[in-house]
Image (cartoon, rainbow, N blue to C red; front, side, top):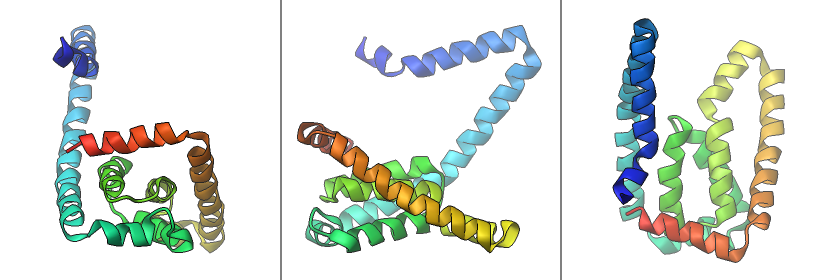
Length: 177
């Protein structure tokens, strides 16, 4: 029964796709094609992220991560989080396994939230595209709005969570292995 509960969303999605296919084959086939494309995309992105995670987990000592991104890292932790998130490649779902490794390495929760925020909104290639396509005024304005927004959201979330909730989040990251 526990296994069934674990996969209930997947099972419901399969049932909905089957019903859609029986109701309208064209829409059902397009749905299946979209799933295939998404699966191929994930298979191109997830393996390199897991290699990166393995290297980060193996080669980066915990004390180094704590020094540069831990509780007492201050401004350098914030700047490193923004840089790592901005330099990252791939969709947002790639940030979460990396964030789990950061948690296991003792990175401050605020810095992890900043990293995820930067991954989702301040990517360097996206900024360069905006510069060339939409102009420097737009690109720089968006970046200057996003960075304080990321910091504000990270600190608000950090302050809203109790120490017990933070401990539970870190515990969940440890259980991913």
